[in-house]
Length: 261
Image (cartoon, rainbow, N blue to C red):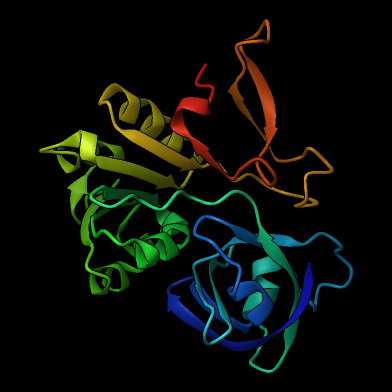
């Protein structure tokens, strides 16, 4: 369902990262962790395609929808120039959400870059507090650390260049985060696809359940165009895999569903 949503805030979060808050009661009241919205950026009338953004936060009582984005192209540059009082047309919430952790299950969130934005609502709505493994190229790309800590989550950091935390890949922190009882942990991932595929395989090797947000570049956002497909397991197929629409059947998939070939 399309909603005309007024911008309440559009502020710099850190560097090129920004946080935008919309008055969107119809969306906020239905949004679930892991879902996304498809935004028509009003100043870009010559470009008909919407932009997909993971839902970072949704407050049903206040009727607000929060998105975190990075300025990387024409669409996000135009969005960054919009001011409170202006509006965008938003379709959503869309997609398959994360499964909230059951009572007694410790959530282990693994985020790469601004994948941390997509797992924030999950952390906020989780009845159990756990750990966020946050990876980035450098300290400049680490966001929302304090926000997760305020929710009661422990934050462990990995950077490729070693500018903060562990030097290396964030998936290298997983095994230690799953101790002492990995059977009572559930892994949730969001970030670049190579990281997610490595995370899914490693989680299964360690015997931990996992869900991965495999969102792709999208055109229609409603499952009609097949531009955002990912490979999932299909034992009935000669190739043992099939294409799945990440906007419709995803973006969240159980790690056991994903094809790693």
